[in-house]
Length: 124
Image 1 (cartoon, rainbow, N blue to C red):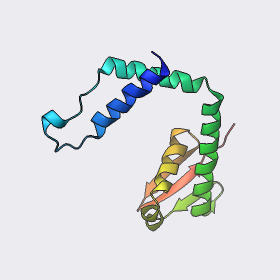
Image 2 (cartoon, helix red, strand yellow; image 1 turned 90 degrees about the vertical axis):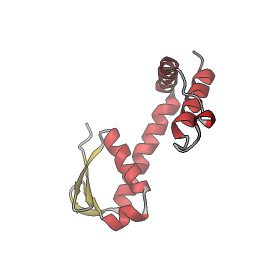
Image 3 (tube, rainbow, N blue to C red; image 1 turned 120 degrees about the vertical axis):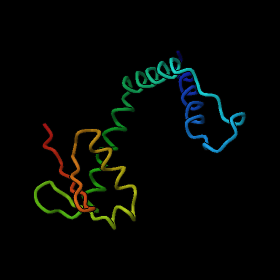
């Protein structure tokens, strides 16, 4: 499968996935073939993993997410930053940054009493 076809299949799948549940059945977008969707995902992932652009994008996202947490959080000790519920409610981007850092195994989040403590892991 070529990358253009893969992207087209994934975009159509997102239209189906995001369609409002209240639409009449005849107005709903058709669900794509799950096998083709899987192949499309593999095609896009393979293309990205072989690209220097992907590595650069991840590195930049890592740096930005860490910077946002460290700029907005309150340092309690070492590499721990606390975010309070009001901050998270006011800026949902903080949750995206936390999710990114956890996904990349750069930090872990401990949630307690509405607060989130982001603990950055030692990088080797």
